[in-house]
Image 1 (tube, rainbow, N blue to C red):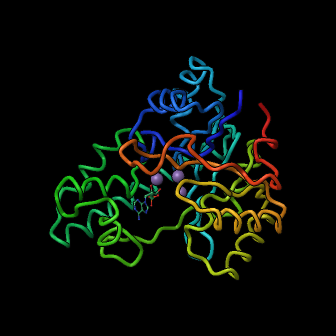
Image 2: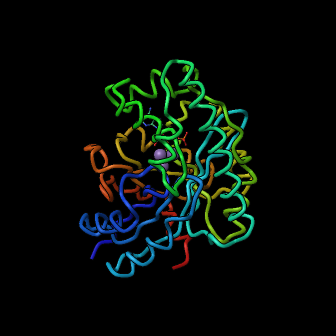
Image 3: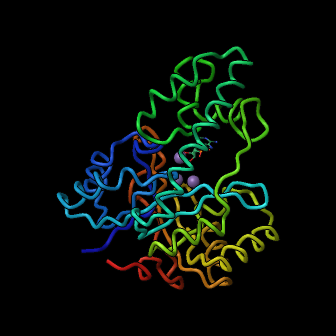
Length: 278
Ligand code: AMP
Ligand code: MN
Ligand code: MN
Ligand code: MN
């Protein structure tokens, strides 16, 4: 049977709509055979995902998507095959939870100034034990009819430079890569085209990423075209990085993104799963 990989997705432990069990069940229905749960800055969904994956016969790769800062910009590094109990990594996720809570308070304050009260209580309630993300704020703005789509919430309030944007110091990129690598995992640069970097900055980023011990880059993600895959595959080849593929699935209501529904990795690229021990 052909292997179907999806090495990037989210559960209710961060900003996904499905619990880890529901997510694994859906992945199984979609024919996924190996998947990584990669919640934002937390590994809290992994234990439940492990139980569900064992029941469904899915190979679960423990993962995380770390928010990192580099040159005052935010990037996402996916860690695959991490050990969530590695103390520096576990400490980092706790610290990031505090960073996210403090940021949430500031975002809510800025929304209040725009005469939108009640955001903090709403996002805390929606996130429950999970990480609070801007997705929770977007959903709140949607539910209160301040916007009519999630995208509009980012465009009008939450995106960089918008009234409720709060710039945040995340983990330092090289430090985050070390936590991942030292816990036994592989660091992968997530969705490289989403940062809108010039070619020159992309090269600087990848140089720094590689020097810090980064080993992979997401070559195939959802809603990507053949030219974009080719472009990223070129970066992978130039920098000696393995290629990953992941849907970045968050919510079944998004009809454009489905677990495991991904273009093949170009054959010239070394698949990142060859670096992972199972
Ligand atoms: P945070 O890590 O809290 O800043 O939240 C980032 C999350 O917000 C991302 O992982 C996406 O799930 C979501 N997001 C970011 N930008 C957009 C956008 N323009 N439209 C919809 N969702 C977005
Ligand atoms: Mn997200
Ligand atoms: Mn991301
Ligand atoms: Mn993601």
